[in-house]
Length: 427
Ligand code: AMP
Image (cartoon, rainbow, N blue to C red):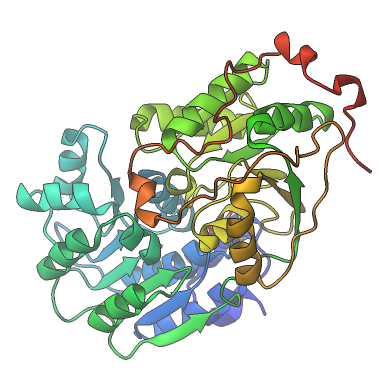
């Protein structure tokens, strides 16, 4: 199928061509005509499927079909859970809308509100926003949502995970009743279905990848290892494999900070990205990682959500996530847009139950490979990790890969650990 058959105008087709896309992805070929016809949609699509263009292209087309004279009312609103995702969606909007005379803006917290107010005052056709900052603007009357024709909820499941349901409801109350609604979610919990039922009107369902099916292109591997040796093994894998760009997931913000510091102590450039970092620090870390200045980006699930990093060859689960679906999201960071990727999980004895849950969710067993020199010590007792999803937002847990490890090892003292000379990647 080609983009020409989807009913998009020439300016959009030209922008698509500039991007070098030859054909629509499945979510695009399904969603675009439905949105153009004016239907609500409920789309099950993860990051990496091309979903952003799936909603951006038809929305831009609709906005450009009839434009009012004078100051423009805000007609399309995209809500996203994170600042990074908001910025990326807006980048997409600008890319695809570059040949159209539409005005767009992005607003999120953590940065000065005044430039946003100026921009909104001048009139914007399409706005990408995180819920908190949008409500700040609404309460200051610096944004008028009463003329919104299209509402897009991107990564709705993550918005609920992050506790945005009340903010979403407040935003909905400010929108006109008569509007088109597009909802995108990677997963379909009961809460998501409830939200969809309350927002969407007779929606057409669009499902692209079977739910919770991990990408076939991504090679997945588990390295069993003791919890106190995870960091050492990670440094070894990065160094011996000469990995240049690695996204590493930890369960906690504290764990992300500590691991990135320890990697730097090992002489590996690293940065942490999580919700406690300022917006500037997060943007800088992502930029340095994308440009290759930083080799390892250590991230929590929420911070990593929606990061658009192309051709990411290595994703490492330093700790398995408590929620199996997060594993699917994490490994979705690699093997995107036709590139091969490998997703490695460092799994200690505490995490065996989490691993089983993940394997049940993705409906396959992940091959295991013990790395020589890092064989798990069978005398170590498991201290299984309790599943408490709300820990995402809570204090760091004692169960991190480094617990009980005493002084963190550095490149210098690491040489004293056992089997150093045997360390070789298993065949
Ligand atoms: P998304 O799921 O929206 O985050 O998009 C994932 C990646 O796919 C982004 O890097 C897009 O630039 C890219 N992409 C989107 N649509 C296409 C397409 N039709 N062909 C190839 N790549 C695409």
